Amino acid sequence: MTDVVLDLPALGRFVAETGRRDIPEEIWTFGRLLLLDSLGALIGGLRYPAVQQLGENLQIAVEQTDGVPFAWTTTLGSAATWLDADSGGSFHPAGARLPPVPTAHPAPHVLPALLHALTAGAVDDDTAIAAFVLGCEVGLRFGVGTSLRPGLHPHGIHGPIAAAVTMCAFVGADAERSTRAIGLGGSVPLAATLAVPMHGGTVRNLWTGLGSYYGALAAANAAAGTVDDGLLETLYDGVVTTDVDVDEITGQLGERWRLRDSYLKPYACARWVHPTLDALRPALAAAGDPAPSDIVAIDIGTFAFAASLDTAGAESDLHARFSIPRCVASVVLDGRLDADGFLPEQFDRPEIGVLIDRVHLREVPDFSAELPTNRPSRVTVRTVSGNFTAEVRNARGNPDSALTVDEVVEKFRGNVGSFLPVDVLDSVIHTLTASATTDTRGSATTDTRGSATTTTLRDLAVAIRTAVA
Image (cartoon, rainbow, N blue to C red; front, side, top):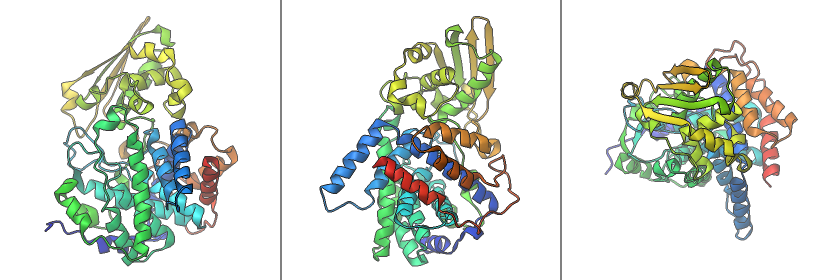
C-alpha cells in the first residue's frame, strides 16, 4: 500500500473554483506571454516535414478506423517540442541533481489540448488563457513536488495531468470531475529516458504529443465518471519518482504560484546550451561581429553537464539542439537560433561544419561547483585581430533576468515565419501582450481581464487546423 497521500480533491476544487479574476496580475501577465511563446514553438514545429508527415499518418489512421479521439493533439504536442524552444519549465528546489534536468514542461502538453478545445467550442480569450494558466500551474506543482527516477525525461509524465486540467477548466468542469481528471491524467506516465533526445532521437517529441493526448482523454473519461482508484499515488510512490513533497503539490493553492519560478527560453535549443549562447553574443559584439572566415577559434568553458554536449549534432535536428558547437555555429552565421536554422534546407550548410570544427569545449570545475545556483559559461572568440571574452553566470529568461515583451514577440515571429498569415499573427500578439509591461515579470498597472469577449485564440486554432489539414 502506498505511503503517499495526495489531496487531489483540493486540486480539483482549485481548478473548478479559480476564475480569471482569481489569478494574480503578475501571473496573468506572464501566463499570456508564456502562451504566446508556446504558440510560436508549436507553429514553428509544424513547419518541419517530419511533423507534417506525422500529422498525415495520424489522419490516415483516423480515417481507416472508427476515429481516434484527440489524435490531432498528438501531432500538435510533437510540434510543440520539436524546436526545443518550449518554455515554462521549472527546476527542482533542491536542484543538486546532475544532470540538472527540468522537473516539468507543462506548457507544450497543455497547448495542444487547449487548441483542440478551441476548435470544438467557442469561449472568450480570457477563459482560454485562464485554462492555460491553470494547467501549467498544476503541472509545475507536480514537477517541482517530485523527483523523477534518475535518467527519466520529464515529457509525458506530469504533462498529461496539466493537459487534463486545462480541458476541465476550459469547459468549466466541477471539482469532482476535475479531481477524477487529474488522477486519470497522472495514471499514464511515459517512462522515457533522457539519453534518447541527447543522442538525437526525435521520438522525444512524440512523448509530448502522447502526453497531451492522454491528458485530453483523461478529461473526457473523467466526464464519463471513470476513476483512477489511487493508481497515481502508487506510481508516484517510487515507480516513476523517488520522492514526493505533498505540500509542494497541494499547499497554498491560489496563494503560492509556481509559474513565478518558471522561465522563457531565448533560443530554440536545450536549456543547458543557453548560458554559452548568452556569453557568445557579447563576445562577438566585442569582436566587431566578425565574418565567419575571420574567426580562428571559439573557446568555451562551462559546467560539467553542458561541457558534455560537444558533438557535431549531425544525427538529427534535435541532436543539433543538444550540441553546443552546432548551436554556436548557427548563432555566428544567422545571428539568432530559431526554426529557420534547423529546417532541412539549412541544416547541412557547409559553413556550419567549418565553424563546428573551430569550437572547443571544456569543463571548468569551479563552474560545476556553482550548480545548482548558477550555470556559468565563458566564451572567447579568437579572430585574426585579437581575442574577445565574455562570461555569464546564468542564462537569460529566468525570473531574475526576464526577457522583454519585444524579445518574446521577436522569438515568436522568428519561429512562426510565414506559416500563417501576418494579420492572424498580429491579432494574437496584440491579444497576448496588450497592456503588458516591457518586463515579463513586471506588474502591469492595467487589469485587462473580464472585459475580453474576443475569440482571437479560437480564430488562431482554426487557422492552425486548416493549415495542417
